[in-house]
Amino acid sequence: MAAPKDSKGDASAGVTLAEYESLAARQPSLTERLKPEERERVRRYGQERVFQRGETIFGQGQPHDGIAVIESGLIRSFYTSPTGREITLAYWFPGNFVGGPEVFGGGVHVWSAVAARRSTVTLLAGERLRELAREVPDLALGIIEALVFKAKCYSSLAQMLGTRSLTERLTQVLLHLVHTYGVAENGKIAIAASFTHAEIAGMIGSTRQWVTISLNRLQRAGILSQDRGVLVVLKPDHLGSINPLLRH
Image (cartoon, rainbow, N blue to C red):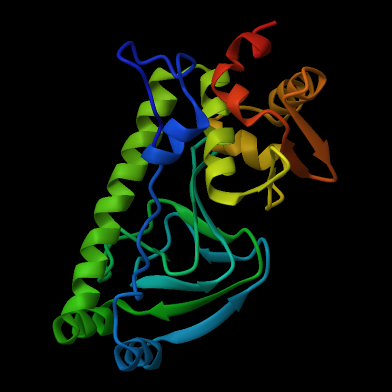
């Protein structure tokens, strides 16, 4: 997820929702540029599977073979440390794929992927994907573009975790959720996807307790409201300056 910053690298200085939206990028769909017959060819080469929420698509350390193209739903990729701590790497949408970087197979998975919502994916084994890449040039280009996007995404994540405070990370994630899932109405923005406090904590490398305390502070300050797991941002233009509120 891309993050805006000023010349001093302070995420709290001058960050507006409009500025963030101009910088935040969405990964292009792997198959949207393909002709209908080419999309059908990809599906014929693959195996369609449905995963319920919480089911594992592949696990860290398992043999790597091919990719999973997301047809519907939402997939979370994450890394688990030797001590068992998890950090969320990204959430992926329909049209994206999970299973890089060795898309044609080989080695083992360096992170895991699970269904964050009920999801349908097309599994493409490495050798079959290699054949398709040779036969469908636009698919090969799509794979390259997707890997470039993923590299940028993970680079931004590493920069955020390595250089930003917890409050700055939470600011970034809230802006990201607003941009990605936000539905505007009457000056408010509802995040039209339910994320638990534990899931948000996983995105920023924090604890559920810290996220709960911080969101409650923002609610008391009138910046957002929480109702049955749904966040509503009451003052979108204030998100870029919430850090002082979370330091108290």
